[in-house]
Length: 89
View 1 (spheres, rainbow, N blue to C red):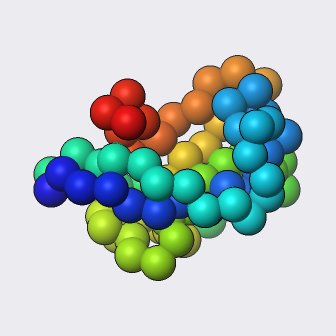
View 2: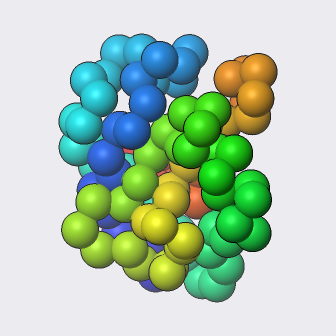
């Protein structure tokens, strides 16, 4: 599946998202075959508490990721992992 999806910026206080507004909808290409983001309840609680969820799918969630998560950062905020493929933009 290769097409463009909409993501919502959930955290604009990162080096990757500081040019966006919180809540802004952006268009990013996906290249999806299989896989999605999932984690246990403890990890999800920690991600939310630390504001590490950076992007969520807006509207369609093409891969069924947990709570529409499309991108997270590590605790230091210097590594971003995304399921969409921004390198194709």
